[in-house]
Length: 292
Image (cartoon, rainbow, N blue to C red; front, side, top):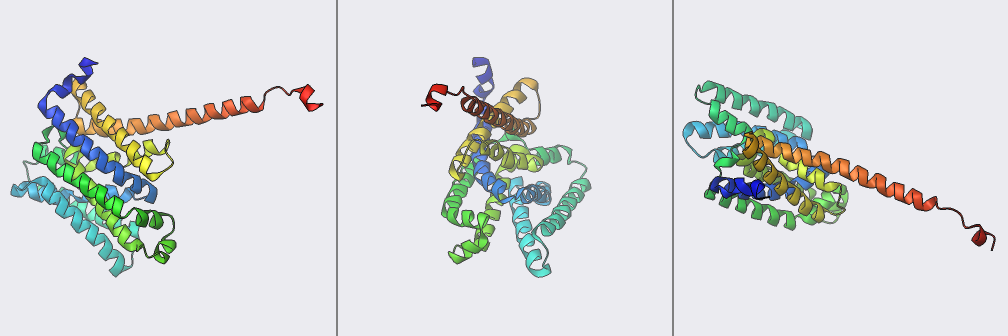
């Protein structure tokens, strides 16, 4: 056990664990709604849509997270504008901007000959480089996410299951959708440092999917997803330490692995319960009682 805890005696690993846990909690709250609403494509598109802003910020010597946040906000606004003005479907708007922003990011990156290392950090994150300042930003992002999710909980629920009822109740489903898009943007930006633009969707989806097999309410799903996410962060960091693998990718891979294991365990549990139920139903008939 002491050997397994050895990596976290190093200061940078402890900061990585703390920052990763904050990101896991943020992604768990948002990811639960992403899974319920089927918004995985939006999360992936925003992750890739950050690339131009991150690239420009890196070239200008500005913190990458500022450029990524600006780029993600621009993309979110552009999705809404395309829907309103061009009357395009939600998926079509996301698809067009996804390709456009990704292409722009690649063009900017390819224009610079000294971008190899920075591009790797953009795409896959650099969780081991998390600083105390980053942790403060991640903590603020988690607090804002929790506050908005709590304030809009009823609106999110109504809009997810019946937008017409939401309108009737005066819950404004369009505003709820905008707020949820904002939360997805915030989660993607806050997770950028830990797992990069390519792997952020894994942290959004996998813990929520893993938790969904064992819970029956939205709140309990968020709580269990947070636990799965934190364990995935700790496991990924430990594996990367001993196996000398990329930390961000290992964290995302651990989250996916836990989702798969959770699914297998849930199926096995259901089969065991069914088998026990069949065994009880198939007990021998008491003939004395039946002829009484």
